Amino acid sequence: MVTPQFWQPKNSLQLLINDISDNGPEVSVSCFALSKNDSYLISASRRMITLFNLITYKVIAKLKGHLITGLAFSSALNIMVSSGEDTQCGIDKWEKQKCKFLQMPDEKMQVVLSATYIQFHQDQIHFLVVHETQLAIYEAKELKCLLHWTPLGSVSFSQATFSCDSQVVYASFVDGTIFVFDASKLELKCTVGCVIEAYPNAIASHPQKPT
Image 1: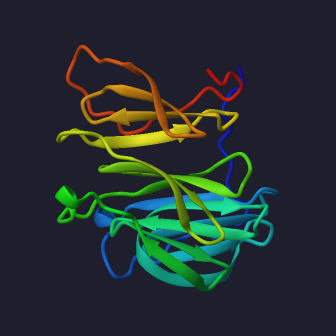
Image 2: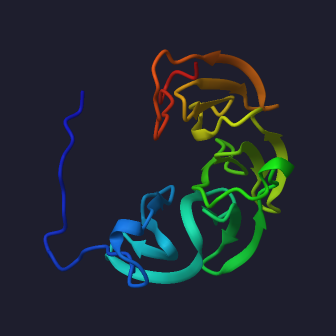
């Protein structure tokens, strides 16, 4: 087991701070993503995306976006994808390239704002999207929806993640139930029930064992 180490820059002034001037920190949903070589940190707080250089601790660029709740960086395509409470996904190359709204189920068209999360597939070309109403897999370059799965009834997703080999998707519901999907088709493989009331905030897959 590795003991976590706390580290901060020698110069206490070199802090990476998000711009949250438009709203207080108590209403800011923050998220971040690292580039593959760990040289850059992309951080978001509400409508502002900030790109930091982790060598110099300087801000390289700032983008104004939507109500951001998720960020993912593709080293293969050299793009960043952001997702937000407004069910919008967008591509950025330090300036917005394109955006698309999720395909909402007809009966849930008036869904209130809800966090939308994203995670890149191992191939760095496709990404998983999870919203309380659905799971979807998109092709990143054109933001094309390839696979889509919507639960029946009023149950809602809370979070989802790829397995370490991206062959399986594990998804959690607000009642604590876990669904396991074949990632290539988004077909349900099995479910894991929960005997108590639960609201999982996150789900993580094993880093070495796909199953």
